[in-house]
Length: 267
Image (cartoon, rainbow, N blue to C red):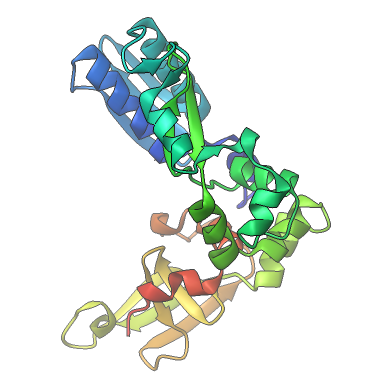
């Protein structure tokens, strides 16, 4: 299947893993550690005297946390050995773990849905924490969220569509149809991407809301005279669609409103 809902459910974000890797290098005093993403849900992890290839992001998080616990320095930077000083500051600045949120907190920021839906979004749709801190001397990592996270959701995410997925009123493929997401063979003039002669370039793209995406950070208006759609497909082609920049990007188009990407339009 071109869409892997399981991946959404089981991924740990890059930011979280790179944060753990940084902590590992700091604690072990070795800068040779490396993390390579093979796919959004699979990584190669290189540690001192250890190599873990093609493991899931969850497994990578478990391994790194385990290494950090072995190296923990009890009491350093902790308040009563139970919460880090940085975590305490996060609380003072209005941030808190998802377990501390209430429906009233969400409504105050314009999020007019249930607390359970918010938790589902955080778990399944890669909602990034504002800060990550240790909340025990045993290096338990806790993700902290605040008003900025919630207001970002309200402003940029397709909450009505995602809520229907959460309620199981529609499936992911049905949501794709509602968003009218298509895969396409496209020909553009190179002047759109900095070329001088208007030479035609063929590329594999995704089309949504009259924007043609070559990558998550580059798109064109379908109405631009320099853009020509040669072929369209309602599902990701099994063969012949070779633009790795757009791997799993259709999930992002379900998650975010089109306005989120308008800053990347090439005119």
